[in-house]
Length: 169
Image (cartoon, rainbow, N blue to C red):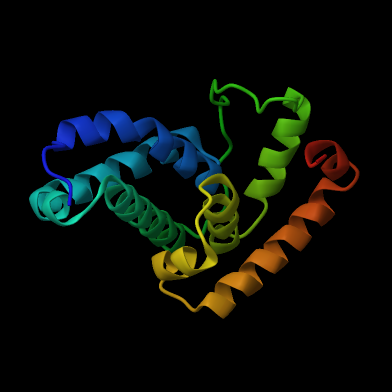
């Protein structure tokens, strides 16, 4: 149980990370901002109940679930394709990865279908288990495994030779 974290403190402390996840899912700076606002606006009315019944990890997981469902819902409504981004976010590059390679990875990620992109972001950026991703998507574990496998194969294909530079162990 988590007592005492008020909504303002939660929103302030989690907004940046929610934005990063949203941006990686949608690939659009402004849409990511909108998704974070939609997520927070959906959490606010039920905050008292959520706060009383959840740990910090539970609150974070619920927020990501709301974000994911908002993103997928928005994608279903907007079938007109990707929107060009006027500017890229000013976030620090991953350690040891050249900015050009990072942009290549972001471009490849944007080419995945929305559900596939969401699975990759939640599994590998957010480090959620397959079971957790399945629960967030409201689908089976097998479906998530299949989406994950197809998504990684497509990313390998899109990245070509660059994947060796990105994923050195």
